[in-house]
Length: 426
RNA sequence: GCGGCUAUAGUUCAGCGGCAGAACGCCUGACUGUGGCUCAGGAUGUCGUGGGUUCGAUCCCCACUAGCCGCCCCA
Image (cartoon, rainbow, N blue to C red):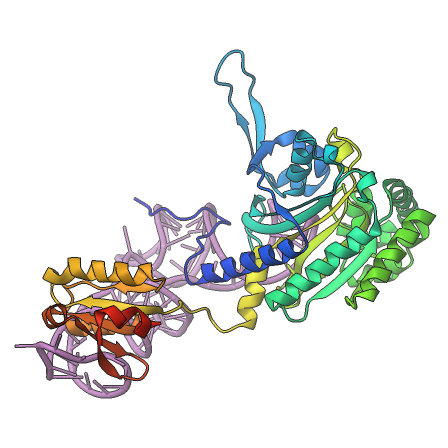
């Protein structure tokens, strides 16, 4: 019988690596709290149409990368329903915003999430089929200020702070504006027009993109096509006055906070719902998957999903990639040592040893418990791997109330009264 | 979905058409209530899975699966 393995593109996260994951999540929660964000937890699967409508029917995510299944009807009166494991979390958050009528509060909703997402892509470094995202959304009725460029700048400034507090060294911020949905539509039309006479001279991929998703041509890395691409119309020329002023204000606020950025006129995000500000934080050393996080404004998403007008801005960062980046920067993760290894000398002392460990743990110490079945030498060997100190509990110690404690680092060994043990181990 | 590379001990890897290897780790002992350092000894295993060629395949061939790298796309 073949052994069972984690399915393709999924993996187990084990100690001590999970400590790094917890550190990243704790840091994110701490920063989000300072900006007064609250946590939202949406279901891991949703009605398929949420993603089809929200993310965009024509995107690769929806057309070929979703885990979708038909949830069968359980009674004749019930209809089967197409369900999908969430490929990203923004659509779910906006669905919840609409469903719970959060706009009726009149306040901006500032929500963050941390959780797994699912895409059926070919796995490679930093790209898994179950991957973890940390993200946040600022969304609300226009009267709450949800359209203000200040919100864009605040979110981006928060991300710069978060990456710094995580200790990510050398991140880069690229930013652009894709304009309102009307601007975007006019620009895409202009792009198509400009591409029509020249696309035959471009590579195969770009010829296809010119048809299916002209914005993607701008992203092309094909060296031979760069000259043509440089000659294509720029999105900035198609922004209306409001979008232009909006973008100027975002940049001004970033300048005021000295958040470094590069305006990249070719930065277009793949998902249909983005409008105006789009941005991406990248880091070298991640190979082809160099984006740490991406985000942008989605002023029309709520309405696309049948909700009220609720402009918003948000981002999603790949936690898997943060882990990779931090691992590359730091020394290999090592399991933290326990404060003490309690070693009963003989199986008859096991129960007493558990009682002692319970006392120490009750005082907040991190304690490993050995086994009286171990030879003393083995207890020392294990203790040396797991803890800073070893506490011996033999017949002598039990009757005298004086416990033997040895410090593995110094080799110093002393007798300590049981009542003073907690303090001695701190 | 496409292309390239890879798969051998717990781990990192070497190897060869004819007995399965190293280092680290692990176990035992030198040392019966004392770890690390040292020394002596020991076990590592369906050589990814299935098929083919061959007297004989871990090695050559094919398929599959998985991983890595890139493409597509994307966080």
